Length: 189
Image 1 (cartoon, rainbow, N blue to C red):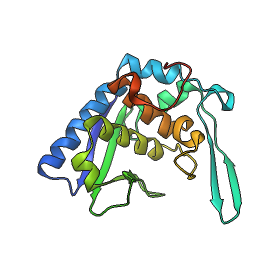
Image 2 (image 1 turned 180 degrees about the vertical axis):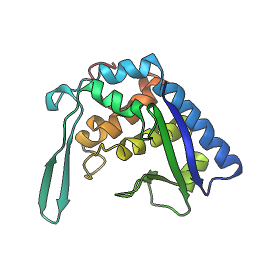
Image 3 (image 1 turned 90 degrees about the horizontal axis):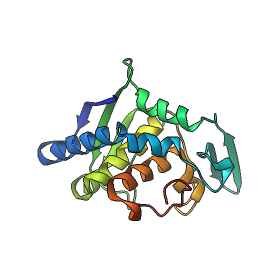
Image 4 (image 1 turned 30 degrees about the horizontal axis):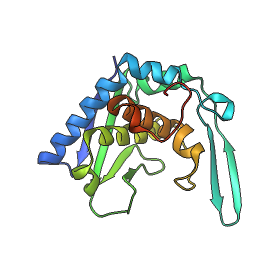
């Protein structure tokens, strides 16, 4: 069983801290469920060899650079998630910071070289616990080394098939049911 521990919760107080703890508990329960494990193991797509997308594209001016990243099997993706980021096996340690201000539709982010998950206050206060838990697992996937392209929100390679987005959408689909995802995965119809 993988445990999740909050080691830092900067700017979280009162109701916001309680909501964070509830989202973390929901996340911990879900990633340890047989349904989550099966969803990751059985993950199949219509593109890119039928597996998670491990290529990151960056657009700089008119040039697009493509980086080929290490490919993992579905089992390796699951193991990497559940192994945790702690010196102790099967333990996820999270540093979180609630950001005041706003960045439009962006819920939060993880800065390059940092292991802190930043989330904007308006989302902390207003999003459902399911969406909050899905945001945290998305950013945690970045912490353990999974990336996605930085292109528009309409890029299916980013939105549906990269590990951070696919795991995010899997979690929401498990918690909310079949209408929770706009992505078509072969195993979750």
